[in-house]
Image (cartoon, rainbow, N blue to C red; front, side):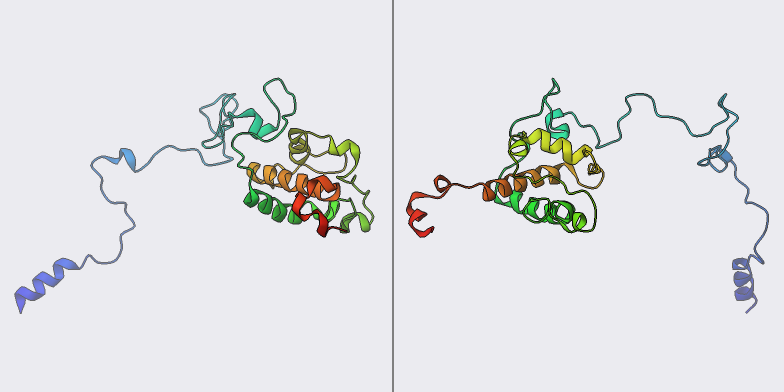
Length: 195
């Protein structure tokens, strides 16, 4: 019985101590650090937060392909067609339709005629996608307008990822073609069904 009491007393450490534990090598226990937005005596300006060096790129943000990320070639001209990373297919068009309905149709309307719900409530109406001037836009120019905005259209580069902007362009072109189709756009074996 005495032996059991002795062993149990070895497990009891008493009340928690307010003293810090003894560390033989305290180098990693108390590190000097700068909290966000705090002062620092290390730098001459007294600021603890530092501005990143010029040209610093965050991991995963290196946008080497100029055409894909800006819609322009290395000379600053708008690209015609789609960059090679864009896989133009039905899935891309359907994704573009989905993104168009979310971001574009409130102003531009579901068919791109500029008669969305926002202009109906008093905002200046955007131009129709089916105007001759806009039909001549290169894909890169459309990408630039979506990314950076124009006139009272805000930039959408912060809300819409790059791949979705190219998808919207594919649907944009589909809308233009649907509203400006001719009999030659219909396969010959189906033309007799059109009245």
